[in-house]
Length: 124
Image (cartoon, rainbow, N blue to C red; front, side, top):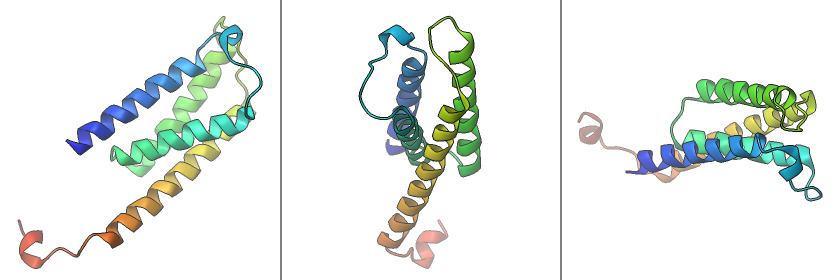
């Protein structure tokens, strides 16, 4: 059940982020936190959720970077009054790297917290 929940959460977060990135510019709230921080937080969250869903490291990193690039191109080309730009993509990439590092730390801490498997359990 947990893997299915993790995959569902990851898919929902991807859908929500896509809706956010493709919302017409007139409907995007102004003011608030720095845009680059928001980009990094979104992609950091996606990376952590992807690792929870057990997406392999490299596939997740490359996939999220491609997703970031595509959303920036769509913002630049669709008639939604948005600007796709390289600094946003770089902020997305920083978020991905930080999220993957957090996932690595969580995995290692989780491995330390689990008791070692006995020989009879590992042969099942």
